[in-house]
Amino acid sequence: MVEQLRVDVDDLTGARIIALLTQHHADMAATSPAESMHALDLAALRDPAVTVWSAWLGADLAGCAAVKELDAGHAEIKSMRTADGFTGRGVAAALLGHLVTAARDRGYRRLSLETGAEDYFAPARRLYLRHGFTECPPFGAYVPDPLSRFFTLALDPE
Image (cartoon, rainbow, N blue to C red; front, side):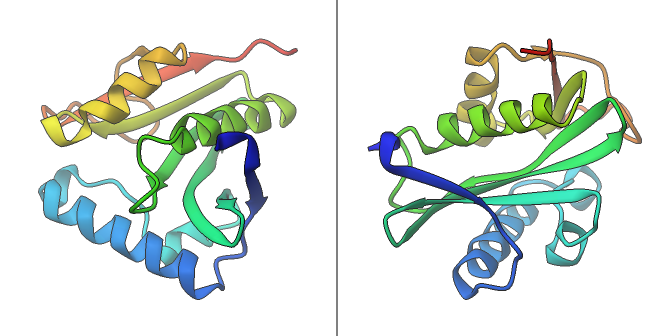
């Protein structure tokens, strides 16, 4: 199924991507207390430092992910989400591979992320570890938080 996945830069104007990201933000707010919830809302995802990609299987929106540039050598993964009905089909792994390739192509030396420490986020943590990310201390503007886990991947140019 994943071989049919098409990943495009998204301008965040389509109703389906807006609905998916709105659902993602609401789910994150319901899962984590406000001080530990770091998902970007639509306005923040439209920042020029952020690129959002949508993943499509045919005409169906299967997921999305974003990368935010922190500096010329470091970027952060934001708002990874697989759409309902597409979990367990390799969408997240394919999107993550796309983000790593895009980060390398942009010349970043490091790609990092924050995710939750709660059981709800265990599948995401396993995904990142399977793809070579390692736990790290808080980066950027993050501070230590028992409800957050931080991961990073050193990017070697290919």
